[in-house]
Image (cartoon, rainbow, N blue to C red; front, side, top):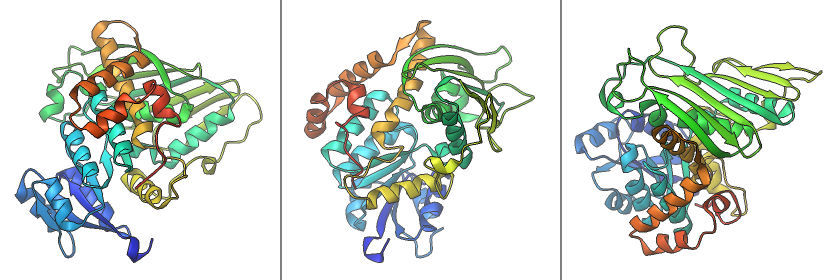
Length: 378
């Protein structure tokens, strides 16, 4: 990337995650943090002080974008603010990379998909756990087994967060499950069709809401993906990535969430190389940032990057569907949920350009995954 194409970035949200993003962007050639916005001006100023040369600060995004000439907004705000921040950035002419989830609700996420189309800008959701060479190896080894029929994640941790997580209705599903759900779509190379979920709260739990769940998804490939998880399980904890098992006609691949996946093939298969997948040079949020920058520089006909908001929405749909199933005690068909969310988005939308795009879609799933969604644009 040449100096002439340097990306000028405003970071929205100057808390712990925002500071991590500020450091990542500052360490990347071809990009510069020119502004930091936060509801607390003092917090924004303190974050700007960590940068050589500082950055302009403010409490209002549109004005700071205009003042700095930014062409990128990085959204590190709380989920409840994601829709407003991204919608404002798009109207200001900026491409956006944001922390997961894309928005607080599926309806708001669909609004942002339509906004990306209406304003012809790239919106990428940083599902940072996908940018992990071991996840790439898991996907590659799974593909080497032929058609996968079973995917499973066991996740058992006992974090004492304090604060808002311990007061949420569904802390595990709302705050954590999107990571394995998104990874499952990638490593199974399949999309969710339906889910049956039971959530519960063990009697010793220190959470107010349900801190444990078992969810089984039917995928469009015919595979079944099961998530067994708890956020109040002391002893024999899994890694934060969970413990994975993929099974197909050719055998099984297991991953402990930390080291290299282990292939146990029924035939003489060699472990597949991660190079066969979309391995990133850097992992975590740095990998997501690199993918975002590469997409901005790519020709308009380039396929959309993983994490593009249209692609990412189905990971959020898995979360909402699991919670809906747990509340109702019944299976939930994800296409039904998507169409209900589109109706909610149309009812709530105040931007006529975005409303027009939403109203013009065919079925939501076909639009998100098909030719109706735009290529990477910036």
